[in-house]
Amino acid sequence: MTAVSKDFPKPSDAVFERAAEVFRLMSTPIRIKIISALCHGEKNVTEILSEIATTQPNLSQHLNVLYQASVLDKERRGNQIYYRINNHDVVALCRTVCGRLASAQPAEDTSPA
View 1 (cartoon, rainbow, N blue to C red):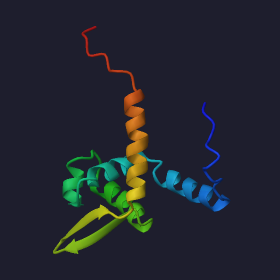
View 2 (view 1 turned 60 degrees about the vertical axis):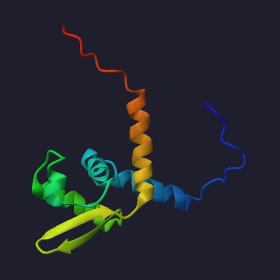
View 3 (view 1 turned 90 degrees about the vertical axis):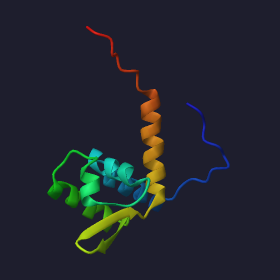
View 4 (view 1 turned 60 degrees about the horizontal axis):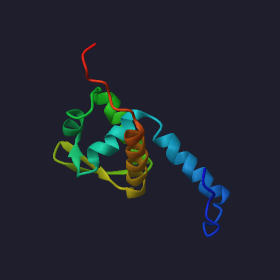
């Protein structure tokens, strides 16, 4: 394990509390999938559902949690609600964690048994 640079200031307790809130918020796979689905632009609920295997009520519940936490923003257009990323720091965190885990994951064995 490498030592932390002395130039890096020690975070305050408030920073640790906020970090814990973000990790709690992103503690369910579906919320991370939602963030991933919206990384390349806004989508409505139907478009998000086409990418994430869940029910509409379950998706709506998680979208609302992310909206209430200001991770997402939304806009009504007619009878559709479009969601988009509002907090790009959360996106960067998800990309970093998922990217690191994906690169550390052993290749799946696709050879016949």
